[in-house]
Length: 358
Image (cartoon, rainbow, N blue to C red; front, side):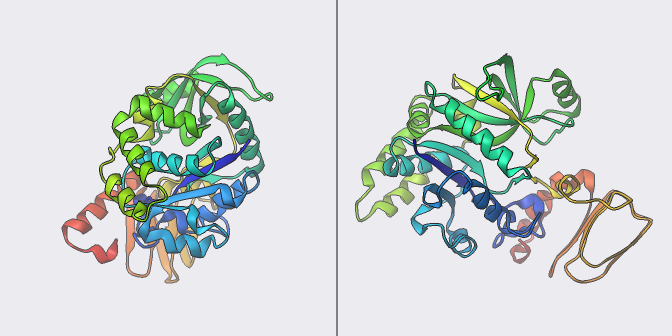
C-alpha cells in the first residue's frame, strides 16, 4: 500500500499580519518551536511517509522559499497553482498528478500551517485513518475534540455510532456545519458529538477523483483536459490555462457536505490551526499575568496581552487584553476581540495603495 500526502501551502496567513507578509507568509515563519510551520509539518509526516511521496501545492511566489526551507523535497513534488483558488481545485490538481505517479495510493491532505504537539499520536491516528479509507472507498476526516466553545472553526457532527478500528473511535459523519455563534458553539460542546473541522482528510486518490466526477463535474472535465496534456511539451501551459477556469470552491462545500460514506476520527493531539494572534495564548507559555511576551518587553500592570518585539523595546503600563506586534516597518495594536478582523487593515492598505506593507 502506497501512502502519499498533499500539503496545502498557498495561503498568505493574513490574520497573522504584520509578521506574516505576502513575501513570507505564516507557514514559512517560526511561530512555535525552532523551525517554520511547514518544516515541522514535513518532519512530522516523514515519520510515516517517504519525502518522495509528499507533495506541496503552493503558488509561484513561494516555490523558491520551499526549496530553501525543505531542500530534500524533490522539486517535481512542488505543485504550482497558476492562480489562487480554494481547496477543491488545489486538491483536484494534486490528486490528478499523484494518480498519474502513484495510481493506487491513499492520499492524506492537510494544511501547512497547523500546530500539532503530539507527533507520534498524530501518526498513529493517520495509520488508522488510512485503514478506514482503504475500506470500501470511505472518505475520512480528523475531528478535533473541542475543549471550549470556539466560534472560529467549522464543526463536524457525528451520528454517535462508533465503529472502532485499532481501538480508535471511528464515527459516521452526520453533517458538516459552518462556524457557529457562541451560544451554538456552547451547545455543540455540551452535545458531545461535534468536533472541530481540522481540514485534514484521508482517502484513496481514485475515490476522491470519483467523487469529483460525480459532485463537481465541471471541475472534473477541466482536470481531464489537464490530464490529456500530461507528457506533452505544452503541459504546463495547458494546466495554467485550464486552472483559471476552476470553480472557486472549498472541498468541504464541493464534496464533503454532499458525499456519503464519510467517517470522522475524534482526536486529541495538541492541535491548533493558529488562525490568529490569540492562538499564541494556547500554544505558548503565559507569564504570571496571563501575557504572551516575546522579545524586548518591559511591562508593568499589564494583563492578558500578546506582545512581540522585533528588537526595539516595547514598554507597557496598565493595559489589558491587547495585541502589540512590532516588525521592522509596521506596529500592530489591536484588542484581542478584534484579532480575527486584522484582514480589515490589509483591505484598507490595498485601498490606500500601500502595498509595500502587505
